Amino acid sequence: MAMEVFQTETHYIFVRKERSLWWNRYSSEFQLKCGWDLSSVDDIECIGVTHGIVGTIALQGVLDPHLIVIKEVVPVGVLYAPHLVYKIRSIAVLGPDGADTVLLGCSKHTTSQTVKVAPAGGTAAPDGHPSPAKGRLFESSALVNKTWGAVKSAGSTIRNTTEKAAAIATSQVKSTVSLVVKADPVRIEKRVLDELHKIFDETDSFYYSPNCDITNNLQRRGAPPDDRFYWNRPMLAELLRVVSEQPGGEDWVVPIIQGFVQVEQCVIGNECFTLALVSRRSRNRAGTRYKRRGVDEHGNCANYVETEQVLSLRQHQISFTQVRGSVPVYWSQPGYKYRPPPRLDRDEPETQAAFERHFDGELQIYQSICIINLVEQSGKEKIIGDAYANHVLKYNSDRLIYVTFDFHEYCRGMRFENVSSLIESLAPEAGAMGFHWRDTNGPICNQKGVFRVNCMDCLDRTNVVQTAIGKAVLESQLVKLGLAMPYSQLPDALKAPFMVLWANNGDVISRQYAGTNALKGDYTRTGERKISGIMKDGMNSANRYYLARFKDTYRQATIDMMLGNNVSPESVSALGGTQTAATDETDALEGAEHARLLVEDCRRLLLGTAQLPVGAWGLIDADPR
Image (cartoon, rainbow, N blue to C red; front, top):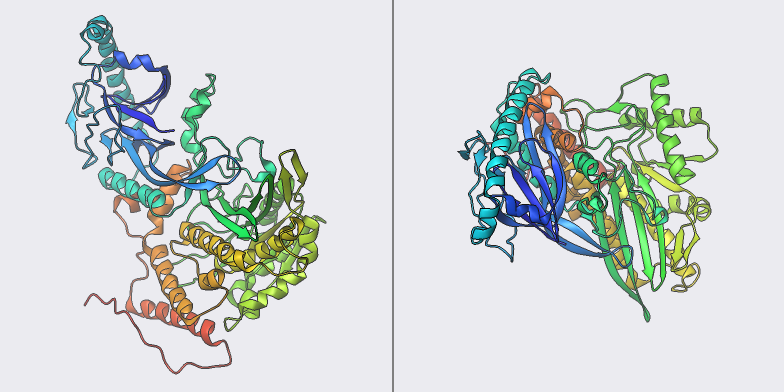
C-alpha cells in the first residue's frame, strides 16, 4: 500500500494510516511516531507517495546519507497464493538537499516538489542546511497553529542547537576518517545516484511482496527471511533496530530480493494453472563479473543464485530448486584483456578452509548436493576445474556428488542438443532428490537435495543446463499431477511459456552480473541455435569486455555501498574522476589482440575445429578518427 511522503527542513516523514515514520535527512536516524505529530511541524509539505523504503546508503566522509524509496512498481503475478509479487520499476533517492526525481503525486494534498539539480545546490536554512520549498500543511487551521505556537518555538530552538552540534561532530569525523581520497564529492554523488538508478530502474532485478516473504523458497516457507537473499537488509539496519523496539513496527520493513520473478498462465486440456520462475541472488560476495570471482573467507561465492520453478494447480503447489555459484576456490581473472586467463590466488590449506565453509553451509540448507561442473577440461579453464575436483576429493563427503561435463567440447559446432546426454545420466540423482509438493493441508513431500551448476561465469552454459534440468523435472511433475502420460515429452502448449521463463531469467541474471543479456539465449528461447544468435553473442561478448574495462568499477563501488561492504580508496577515486578504470593497457597493439580474440571466439563457436575461416569483416568502425 502506498504511503504519503512529507518533507521539512530536517526530516522526511512517511505516513501510513495513523502512524508516521520520520527520517532525519542529516543524521540518518529513524523515529516512529503517531500521525498527529505532523500538526506540530511548521514547514511541512507533501512531496508525493511511495510504495516502500529500500533503505539508506552512505559512505562516511565521502557520501552523506541518502534514503532510497520505491517510486513505481508493476505487479508480476501470484507466486505463493494468494500473495501478489511486485517488480520495482523505478526508485527515488532522498538526500539532504532534496529528492533527485519527482515522486508520484498524492491525491490528498497538492504536491509541491523541487527536484535537486546539483548536489551542492539549495538555499541555506538558518541552521546551515539547505531548505526545501515550504508549504504549510495546516496553514488553514488557526486554532492548531495557535495551540502549538509555544511548542514549535521551543522545539525550533532545540532543533537548531542539536543540528548545529551534529554538524560540528560530523565535520570532525569527516576530517579524521581513515578513507582519505582526493575526489570530487559532487561527482561522486552524481555517479552513485546514476548507478543506483541504472541498477534499480534498468535491469528488472528487484522484487518484493507486501504480505509474503519471497526470500525463502516454497519448502522453507514460514521460516525467518533468508539472510542470503534479503538484499536490502544492510540498508535497513537502522530502521530494523528502531522497529524492533515497538510492536507493529515491522510493517515499515519491506524485504527485497534481487533476481527474477515471472509467472505464466498455462492451459493443458481443460486444466488451467500457473508456471512461475523465481531467482534469488545472494547479497554475499555480490558484484560484477571480473570484480567478484570465486569464494571469500566466509565461504560465500560470487554470482550465487537460487532458482525455483513453481507449478500451481488448484490447491496444489509443486516446486523444484536449483542453485548456481562460482567455483568455490580463491581465483580471479586480473587485467583488462579480453577473456584474461584465470589464476589461483591462495594455497591449498587456505582454499580448503573456505571450500569447507561453503559446502558445510550448503549441506545444512539443502541436505545433499550434486555438483555439475561445466568448465573446459583443457586450455585456460583447466586450472579451475582441476582445483575444484581436488578440493571435492579432500572434502570427502558422501552427501556431495561431483559431475564434470565439458560443455564446449560436447556441444562444439552449436550441437547444444548434446546436453541431453548429461540430463539422462543425471536422472537417478534427480529422482532421488524429488521435489517439494504441498496442498492446503501442508507439505506432501520435500526436495532432498539440489543441483549446483557452474561454468566460469555461471551464466551462459549454466543457463542451458539448468533449463534442461528444469524441463526434465517439470515433465515428471506433470505426470504426478495427471496432466501428462508417463515418459511423455513436454506438452506443446507448455513449451512456449516454459522457454520464455527460462530465457528471460537467463537474460536478467546475466545483466546483473555481466551487464548484457545471456549468450546462447536463442537456444534457451527457441530450442535452436542460429547464426543470428551467434552474431548477437559476439556483440554481447564485446559489450561485456567494454563494461568490465570501463564501467564495472563504478557499479562495484555502488553495490558495496548498498551492502555495507568496504569500499576501496581506488574505487572512490574512480567515482570521483581522479583515475580511470584502466591506465595500463591502452595501446593499439593490445586493442588489435582483443579484436583477434573476439573473432577467434566466434570462429570456434560457428565452425568448430574441422573448418577454417576464409576471412572476417569488421561491421562497426569505432575509430574516432
